[in-house]
Length: 285
Image 1 (tube, one colour):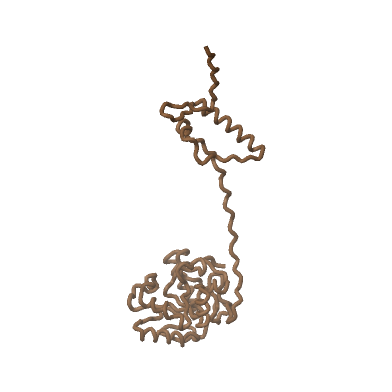
Image 2 (image 1 turned 60 degrees about the vertical axis):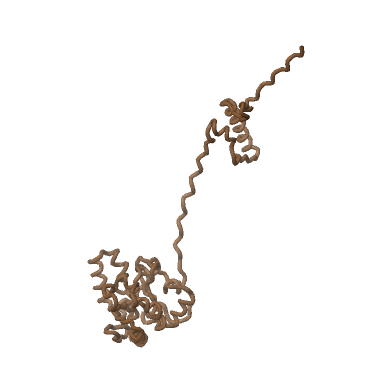
């Protein structure tokens, strides 16, 4: 009788083969596999070995024990503070950007008029006072618009230092300081004091006088299409509050002359601050 071959000891890693051919890892086999894997990971750290977790774990192991726990990731580094952008003056040949009587003067919450109580030479156009230098272009604009069937009016032109003080104080009493200063300048900081700014009105929707809905009127459409030919720039466009310091005002147009309007259009720049590299913003200097 041939002696029976000695039974080989079953490896602790070996699965049990079921009658249907599937493999099943016992709890003991799973623990043994994990112990060896842990040892490999520890030795890999010391020996410079990087072990990657297989893309697909053995499905039977997962079924028996669940997926291996994923170690928590390290918290992200805290965001670093962003340094404020420092604007630099842009070298553009032309009139002064600081002289109160210059057509290119930049007046905003960072740059008041010098002197604060400056007053220009005046003319009357459309029943309102404006700087005399803009009178010919403004008259031409109003006349050509009317010939196109668009009746524009001048709701506001020049305002003296004292008049601007009254306008600002009234807005603060009515709306509170924060809301008032998003639309109304302090005296000495207003473009209206230069006489170069005009608030237009329209006949089609009188209730939109100095209101956002003026942007949806035929008068506003005409101005956007044609005002540049007369040297006027939409001074406070939509989305530029952080630059100009004021909410959008579709009725407020500033005379800068046709040369500068063309330069702005050619550069794709909407505001004087961005074109000249002049600081602006919602806070007063």
